[in-house]
Length: 92
Image (cartoon, rainbow, N blue to C red):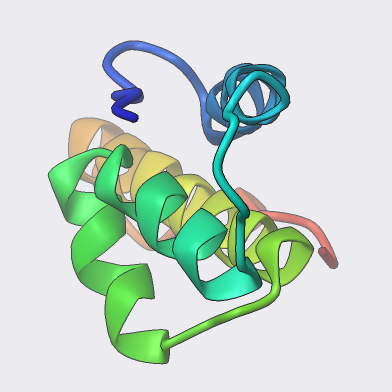
């Protein structure tokens, strides 16, 4: 099973992944589900979340969302210059 994030947000990727997993006929462990989801993330996100060795799917999705938000803030900061200031990722 392969699903790549491509141009999707982490939330959209997680929803598509969950829909696809429903049709998988083999037994699915938490670790397998997390590993397959992480394999489909964009390289920069995968590089940050895989070393965390997260085995709970909701936790993995939340951490990937945080990485996505930090990437977005970093790109915005580089685009407009200066510190991120109020460009926060929220409390999640």
